[in-house]
Image 1: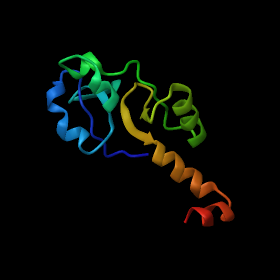
Image 2: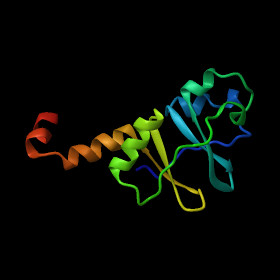
Image 3: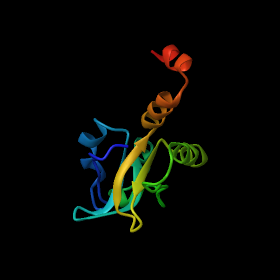
Image 4: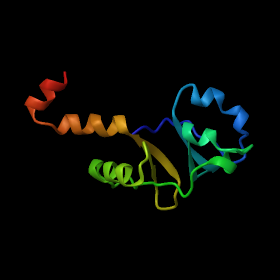
Length: 121
């Protein structure tokens, strides 16, 4: 799980997103700069939608998991909802971190048998 996150807000103009998407393929959308309540997810795919603000084009409701979720739980959510990242939120829906497909594969690789690990390196 990554906790050093880039986020955006619903009020952000779509034409201001270039620097964000130069680094990542998706970002959590939080209520405001001072309120980390998760309200949506924005992916590069969403950028093809018409709209002037993030709030116009973001995906809602966001699919999220709790800090107590397992790697398997996160993987199942990704597959079920066909998403590439799962935000991790506290009981008040405050953003804590995000789990990506890379995080899932890394965790599964650590749990793999020695034969599988050696084949991966």
